[in-house]
Image 1 (tube, rainbow, N blue to C red):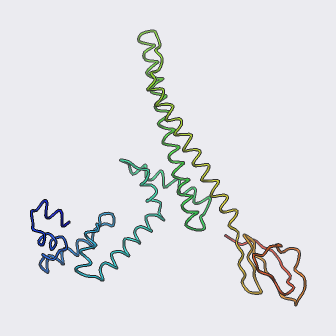
Image 2 (image 1 turned 90 degrees about the vertical axis):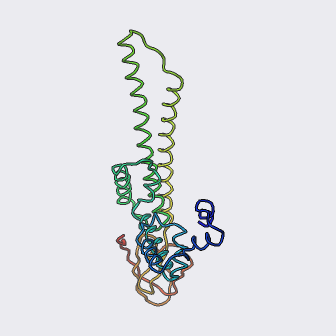
Length: 251
C-alpha cells in the first residue's frame, strides 16, 4: 500500500507510510474505516484491512481473524469450498448440482473425521468432472455427426473428420476416463480407510468397544480370557475373567 501511495498518489515516503497505516485519518474517518472492515464479507477482507485493525484496535484483529476462520470452516463443511474449485463462470444450478452429488455421497458414507470428509468431497468432485466431460464429449461427437449428416444431404458425399476435430473428441474421451478413474480410486481409498480404522476403547470393567462391536463384560475374578474376545486387544490385557455378550453399536 505504501508503494501504491508513492507511485500512484505521488506522496513522499513518510506520507505514503502514514496513509498505508491509516495514521493520517481523523478519528471519525478511522471509526468509519473500522466499521467498513468489520462489515466486509470474508472473501473481500485484505491483509491491508487487517493491518488497519492492528493499528486502530488490536483487540479487533483477534475478533476479525476468528470470524475469518469460522467462515472458512463453514465453507469447507458445507461443501462450497470444494464446489468453487470446479466453477468457472458457474451458474447457481452448477453449484446446486455438485452439492446434490456431495449430499448423496455423505448419506451413503458418513465421514468419521476430516480426512474421510475430504475423500468424500474428492469423490464428489471427480464424479462431477466425469459428468461434465461426458457431456462435452457427447456434444462434440453429436455435433460432428450432425455436421456430416448435413454435408451428406446437401452434397451427396461424406468428408472424413478433420484431425483437429478427432483429436478434440479423443481428448474429451480421455478426460472422461481420467475423471472416472479418479472417482473409483478415491472411493477405494475411502473404503479402505474406513475398513482399517477399527479402534479399541476400554470403558472400565463394564464395556469394551472393539471396532464396530461393543462387548459388555462382567467381572468374575481371575481366569483365562474367553474365546469370543479378539486375540489382539491393542495392548489391553484383561486381568480378570469376564463373561461377554456382543451387540452392535448404533453408528
